[in-house]
Image 1 (cartoon, one colour):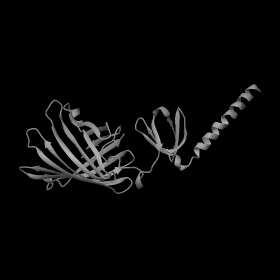
Image 2 (tube, rainbow, N blue to C red):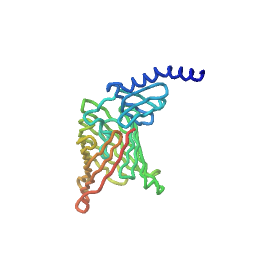
Image 3 (spheres, rainbow, N blue to C red):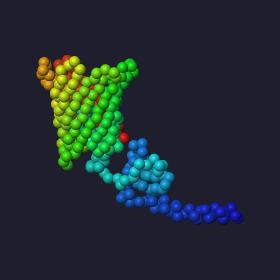
Image 4 (tube, rainbow, N blue to C red):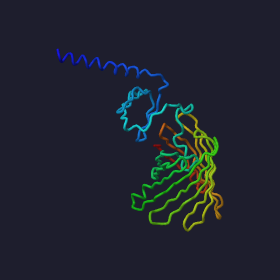
Length: 281
């Protein structure tokens, strides 16, 4: 009898909790939230329950129990335009930069042509630092290291100004580099950028470089992209290098597929393949 009474008391005490859970699970769409985790993962769904130890979120994929200690923040979910999420890699085209800043405490990993790997992180609202390495040279014992710092400012609703440095070379040897300035008009889903820089290569003539690039979102998961460079040389005149293709996107990932056109070899090789991948964090 004593055991039965104890069980009955526990059941009665649990009724308010059960009732609260049921009530929480029927919250209105106004409680649609975005939960950002400390490791960079993001969950969108309806907030069912939240306490000091766990956060329970429900979406079309089911229920997720998240440890509260691993949650960075919870905010109301807002549908970003008609596509549901922004271009996840709006600070760069295939390779070259836009003037749009990365933003504080955000960043991305980027792989270019399988061998080149970069990480860029925003250390303030307008300043980012980054760098990377080339895989094959690293395996062979002569690693090529790269640095890619950048500053960017939004000066009007659809206007950004930026500048940065791209430099690299084998460790312990003199490297090559380029300082550049860039202006971007538009927003993450449709923009056009013009840039100019000065490429400095050891034992070679320094080259003024001009860039004209653009991006246009064509659907929820695909965008059209072009990136064009014009190198002015004293002997060979203007050399053109362009990349044209697509960006395939998800909430945090982008896959870039394109064709590289180089004026110097266009008669023999009309185009070369380009592939790239990036993931924001």
